[in-house]
Image 1 (spheres, rainbow, N blue to C red):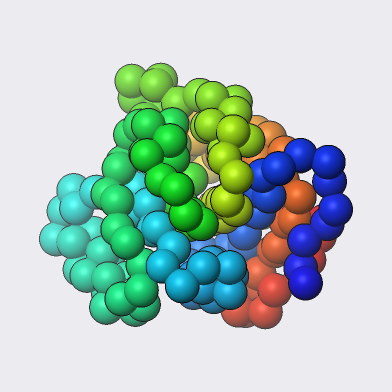
Image 2 (tube, one colour):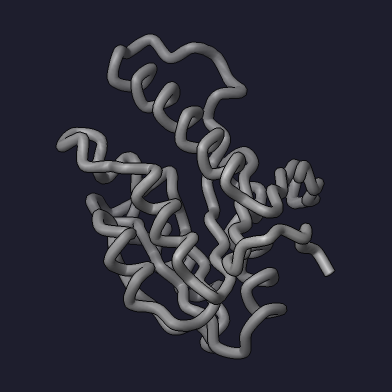
Length: 171
């Protein structure tokens, strides 16, 4: 199968890549291999019409086998509520939602995931491969996102990176 052997109970997986390269689809495929009724924790917020349309497209693509939890801010509580395989889509939006208030705690989310018996899959975007953003807030987000991705990848048993919808296992 696609997991490494580690001595802890929980299996954490991180799926990353550039945006729009089928990250959620790959994450859903992994989750459905592990459970007939996994939980989908959606972190997106419909803050404008374009985002509402994007969310609707994602909902249409989602397999109805998933149980849905919409939680844009408090991933720790959402994770603790679940007793099945979880797919979190996505950490990047969760960070964005919490950026202004500085209410993100990467290690608290990782710790909550580590207390689980079932697998958890974190989807996140790689935003640091492009040019350095001009605006200070954009640079802060890029830097925090990179740190977040490093922490989740380090804590994960398996890490996948997608290019053009093709997954490469990094860990």
